[in-house]
Amino acid sequence: MNGANHRMDGVSTYPFAIFQPGWEQAGLPTGHRGDTVVGNDVWLGYGAIILPGRHIGHGAVVGAGSVVTRDVPPYAIVGGNPARCIRQRYPEAVVLRLLALAWWDWPIEKISRNVALLAAGDIDALERA
Image (cartoon, rainbow, N blue to C red):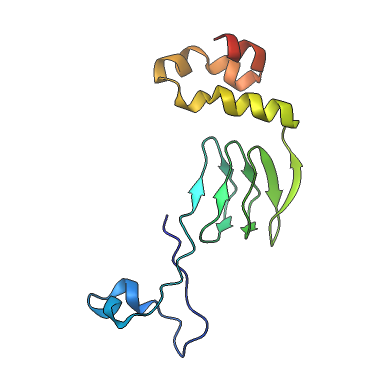
């Protein structure tokens, strides 16, 4: 997703420079805040809003209706408006193991063979798979 945003310092908040051919030549800054990046195995609750330029780490959970205004670390559970960290899903040592495992990059055949382990959460067994 692109990170465009609306300017608040002009008479109009319309993003002229990005929607009409030729208007980009007016030299208006677009307010680009960087790409919004959502990691693998992320659960975004219903109605969650992710502001432009935010990064959601692998395995994170964003509660329904939350407004994410800051980056979310891997395997964090966040919620609220603005979203705040409620807790980590796992201790830091386990998070590092899961990030190294990167099961989402496995071939689909390997994922299919290990669905039960992925659902059960046996990290030791997954590392041996």
